[in-house]
Amino acid sequence: MLPSLLVYGLINSVTLAITALGFSLTYGISRVANFAHGALYVLAGFSAWFFLNRLKLNYYLAALLAIMLTSLIGAAIYRLALIRVRGMPLLEIIVTFALGSAALEALRYFGFLGSHYSLPPMISGSVNLLGVPVDLQRVVLVVVGASLVLFLWLFTRHTRIGLAFRAMAQDEQAAMMLGIDSDFMATLSLALGSALVALAAVVVLPLSFIATESGSNILVSAIAVCILGGLESTAGVVVASLLIGYAQIVTVTYLGPHYQMIVALLAILLTLIVKPSGLFGQQKELEERV
Amino acid sequence: MARRLERIDRPIKVLTEDIYALSSLRTMLYVAAPRLLPALLVLLIPVLAPGDYFQRVATLAAIYGLLALSWDFIALSTGLVSLGQALFFGVGAYLAGLLNLQFGLHPSLTLLLATVIGATICTALLAPCLPLRGIYFAMTTLVYPLLMARTIEATAIVGGTDGLVGVASFPGVWSERYLILIFLLAAAFSLRRLMTTDFGLVLRSISDNDQAVRASGINLTYYKLIAVWVGAALGSFAGAYFTHLYMFVGLSAFSLDLSILPIACAVVGGLGTLAGPVLGAFILVPLAEMLRDLGTLRIVAYSLLLVALVLFKPEGILSYLKRKYEQVERWVEV
Picture 1 (cartoon, rainbow over the protein chains, first blue to last red):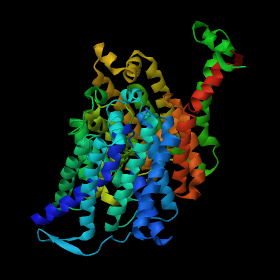
Picture 2 (picture 1 turned 60 degrees about the vertical axis):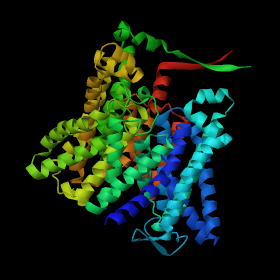
Picture 3 (picture 1 turned 45 degrees about the vertical axis):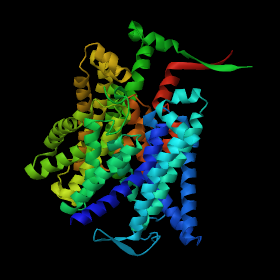
Picture 4 (picture 1 turned 180 degrees about the vertical axis):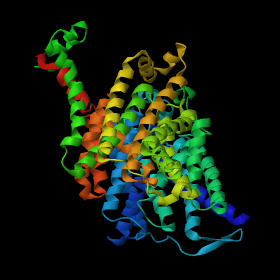
């Protein structure tokens, strides 16, 4: 029992982290809470499926195209819509949320729902970890997740764009005075955040079906992870995913599958009530509560 | 040649603003018409609307109007933006269903009890989040209805995924049609009235600058609790009414649509005007009914309309009408 809890808890945690990184990155840099996150995830899954099955492309090419397409959509959302309501958090949420639900409902209308659509696993076969059989796709998932965190850490510390991102996150006005184009960076942040969620979709979706219903679940768990870890902190995302991931696996094992989402929702509520800045957030206290 | 649009108050508006309001029939009409005419129109709906179908649409519009009014009141008075109106609606709906099925109470009594108890429960749930601001409060409220629905689904209490079936309906068709309209009008007018009192002034200033209000020695939490209680009461009443109207309550009472639609109504009608969201509901709900054939594409049309309005016409219909009614516009050369 324990080894399986450990292994599957880790896999669940990495799944949470990889789907939440995009949301966290976008919010951390541009302060845009991208509520279309779940819709982008589903969209990426379906476009990968489309490239793979309808256009008969190579698997990795299809995945790459899906990621690029999603990232373009993210950039377009900022350029065409969000740029007009920038700085008004409520309207940003309404706009992204409405766009997200429009995309999901449109997909549902055109019949992309249920369990008819799935991506094949990248590698088949399985290995034994601590005596627990784990299929290779899940191993790929963990490897991709870990390298993604490492990549982001290096990227934000050792490249010009990454440093500009962090400057934006710390103080937008000061960053603008140093010649960093705020709108360009925000566009990039949305594009990068969308690319990350698309990557997550391509890696995670072979484990189950592509379903429009998963859009809101992805959004909720991404928000849960980001809020528990602090909305802009990558380290927070990792720690929070481990916490929520293991908590979910434990409750699912002992209480039943219905409780998986309740854990995430309770995590959001309790964090917001007790410490809204999250475990690792560096928000100014006065901005979030009276 | 550069031009700009100049806006000047109409003479009659200036005249009616102070003691001369009652100086002539014309000024009295000017003041009363925009208030009485819509009220009269709303009260005439049950008589004039043809057929049961349109009656039902009007009742639905009134229910959503009440929900939108509750959203706008909370946002206007305390600056707390709720993304979870479905919480109020769902709690009211389930309470009415339970009270009716478990204790066999008459709909008139369940409506009253569901409103009061529901509002108290919702306020108690939201009380710990009241110090939160902006996006944080919005996210907390977004989570509550989801949590409620998942809990009911997982624990199978109050009917689980099947919901509660066989709730009593209203005693007569006229009470079913009129009760909600009268309640809606009463709520809209009394809330507008409330906002002009000293109490309302404090509420309004909380949304402008809460620190200044606190510095004046006013207990913020007390005011916020009352505002949320009032808003939750309206939402719970809407939910309870819905339960008795359809004689059924299910998990859909906590669905996300119920949280989005009030915001859409408020954006269409005009944010912070109280009457605007009601107007918005009476436009959007019939529109949604007309688009019913489109299935879920309806929500697509809805969401895109909402986005377009937020981006390009954030003013709202009521604010636009009010401007035209009170001001003259003309182009002047600069």
